[in-house]
Structures are given as C-alpha cells and as structure tokens.
Length: 320
Ligand code: BMA
Image (cartoon, rainbow, N blue to C red; front, side, top):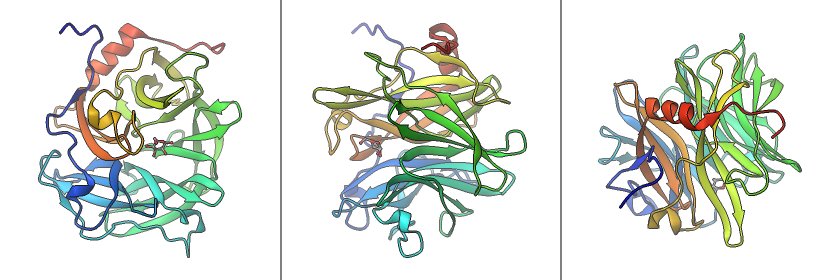
C-alpha cells in the first residue's frame, strides 16, 4: 500500500503492551502513563489505573526492555489522599514525570480531580515508592501539566492547560519554589474552525530538550458528531524563552488507527503522557494510553520530528 503521509511514529508489534489483565489486583483500565528511565536503565511507567468506582490512582510498572517483562507493584503506588489533600477526592490521573537534576528528584505533575473540577498537583520522589506532595499548584479547570527539567531565568517552569470560555490553550508559568506560581504566558493556542487541533490543545508528554529547542508533542481534540478525536501534533520552542514558538506543524503526526486505539472506554484516543530516549540520543519511545483502556508504545526519531517540522512547519503568526 502506498502511504501518502510520513509515518513519524511506528507502533510496537506487541501493542497494547499493558492492560488491566496484567494487573496484580483488580483494575478496570490501565492507560495514560508517565514514563522515565531510572539510573540503572530500567524503564518505569507510572500508570493511571481506574477502578470500578471510576476513580483513578497511579501504579508503577518496571521493565528492563521497556516493552515486556513488566514488574508491577503489588498494590497501588500513589493513591488519592483526600483526607489531607481534598483536591484528590475523585482521584489522581495522567502523571507526567520530569527528572529535576538540581533536586536530584523526579517531579510528577498530575491531575487531581476535586469537587471543583480537575486541577494540577505536583509531587516529588526519588524512588517512586515514597512521595512528597507539593499540593495543588494550578486550580481547576487545569490539566496536562509537566515541569521543565531545569530553571528558566532562575525559575522553575510548569507547562499546563487551563480551560477558558475562549478555548483551551497551553500555558507556561514560573515559580521560585514550586509552590508560588506566576509570570503566566500563553505558549500554544488551539486553532479554530475545521482544524484538527481546534478549540482544545494540551501538552502530551513533557517537553523534549533538543539542541534546536524544546520539542513539544501536543494533543489536539476535534469534536465530531460521534465524539472527540484525540491526535498528536508537534511544535518547537526557544530554549531560553520556551513561550516563544519557533515552528508548528499544520498536520497531526499520530492518531487513533488500530482497533485498540479506536475502541475502548473512550474510543479514538491516543494519549501519550511519557517517553524514554535511547542511548543514541535520538530514538524516542512514546508510551500512550489507547482509548482510555490500555497502554501502547510507538517509536520515533527526534531528528525525524525536527526534519518534519523544518519541512512542514512554520512560525505561528499572532493573527491565527
Ligand atoms: C482528557 C484527559 C485524559 C483522557 C482524555 C480522553 O481530557 O482526561 O485523561 O485520556 O481526555 O478521554
């Protein structure tokens, strides 16, 4: 078959790589995992696990290959703690992991589902066994957040996606202490009308640092008569000024196609929250939730993504 579009990500033949059937305790669905490679080379996925109440918690799965042989925690790794953190009353969802060199710790940005709606919470960990919560850092309605691995202009930087009546756009905010946040700036706006990324965009996995800038994979949501379609796009931002978009692709680069992405609790969703990068510094292993039901893996190349942006992307104008 002739493929007209470039395929920037290749699905793993063993997809879906993790499902609720693999879980050591009762789980309804397993999806939208944060990912990182630990110091010993092990791939760690911090998976969102939904139970039969509809509430989510996080559970760690570790593997040498990043594909199979997963060792899954026997019990939930990170549970909502509404007694101390009322914003977690209805669960914790969609973790994004960043290793913050300065702290020697991983920062996990996650959605805390409160009575007031979903907001952004932060927790720090060294080992994904014990966690130090920083609490709710962005009030509802806000989600799709990840920390940058280092300070920008002397400040920690958080990407997130507040909702407004004028659409849902990606923002960046700065903090001296991970607690007090300000200097809010818009990074990437949702397009309008017929566009695949009209009305609602959000950061997917944490930004990928490249010599040419911060590479963002973001999801765009298209509302159709039969529900929403979640697809992935790419954009590049200035290293020293991450709110400044250098290039943005017009077309989506990855979207639901296979049965496990098309069908599930929420069909037509491919939703990456994490990646690992191989020793070659180029191969990116993207872990994504498929149809809010299982976890899948697709592999791409950072150079390939940058070349695609050079060829197919452009600097956004302010009058979109
Ligand atoms: C988004 C998030 C994700 C979910 C997606 C599709 O708003 O809540 O957790 O995968 O919707 O349902």
